[in-house]
Length: 171
Image 1 (cartoon, rainbow, N blue to C red):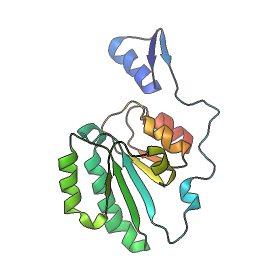
Image 2: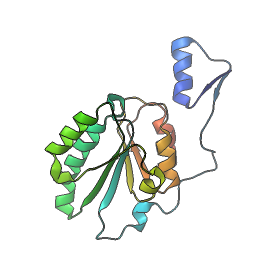
Image 3: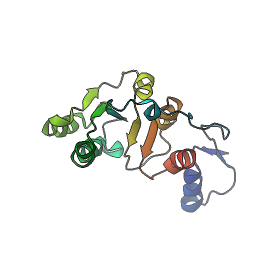
Image 4: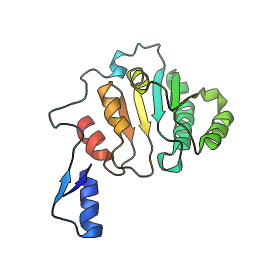
């Protein structure tokens, strides 16, 4: 039996390798589990900054540079218009760390905090309103499960099995 972590990967095996039998989808979350009724953003006081986090390897697949560009857009188009402030955190290391750091330096006014990979992810997620996962490709990111567990809403690109988690649980 072949084990995969999403329906999308099961379909990929069927279409590309003609594997339709003996393929088991090992879901990482039980069907009876739902996200917390009260997410972190529900607890946010009106004068608090909106807390947005990126957690992942700083490589092309995870697209950390896009996180900074999203932060730039949010700052320019939304926060000024609605008198919001942002608390932005980026957790991860290499190989694009220098490239991401240079982009961040060019956007210093955003105040993105770079934190090392050893940072307490559970604590950061429990303090975050949104987790941005702009991956180019993905299976199902475990950090999205962790985010839901800690009341943080994951916002994911529609790749791999992301819609199986983010779309069904948060629809």
